[in-house]
Length: 398
Image 1 (cartoon, rainbow, N blue to C red):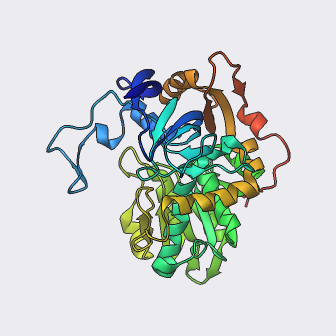
Image 2 (image 1 turned 135 degrees about the vertical axis):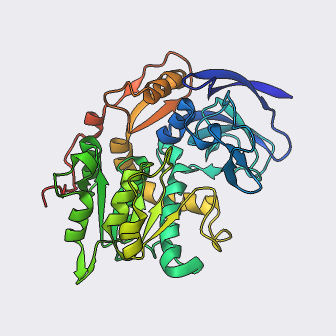
């Protein structure tokens, strides 16, 4: 047996829509989760709306784990988008999930889901957390924690603590989107000596500063002749021939941000890359600092933790670290990162506007609210989301 649900998908490139689908009824060991909140991960979802993600351009060989032209690419429609859901258990056939319990999962923008805890992680949303902030628990927060975990493994091996890669170290974060800001806040929480966020957008730098983070303008927004990487090297000068960040958390899917990260590192430093790239890397010059300073780039992709750490760091453990941050800084996250809350029914229009670059001030974090149609939209502009005194400092005038 199955039941009808509605899900946001993509009919064809450029056409996000609400689709009518069927979801199986819960069987033994399963439960029904009715969705209450779902966060939009703009980078990943907009790529699917535009059709620029690699799976829709090239054939993916799951055995070789490589892209090639030996077969057809993925096709449309895409029946599900998103991975930042919070829902309430309304029926349960498992002792692991109680009816009425609020949980976080990653199953897409859909009105309901048949949850099986043995197949997909289910993270309880505690009573002391704003339920909306639960959208960060199942995947978005763990993406950022996994970045810190890769930094830890780089310096301390598979037995390293979560703070080993940032504690008492100088951390540059490239990108002031949600992943960059959460990663920077995690680095601060876990004892970094200093953290700087490099970001082209003045609006996003203002959000970072409101969160208490130091910032630098990057790219075209930087002062002529004084790019972000040079400012970092001047700020963190450790000795002759040794200047720059100990580690870079690269959080933009743009080759220019990766180039900034590599140039900003001290010798033998590492870029931990959390970005999802849609094109090549023309701005990256591997014969320059990468070669001459003995640098490293490691991808922190949410599908895997560092080698040798899987048993100690399941998704639920990554979620626990996320929860610690949200308990400490949840009010700030809600105030400054979550800029728009709107009804589920408006999701396709927002995604189409984002994909078409039609918004003068795109939301930093949009969250879809599920419930009766026709509820008024709550809109918090970036200006309002940043209201109040910021605790950070811009470093662009250094």
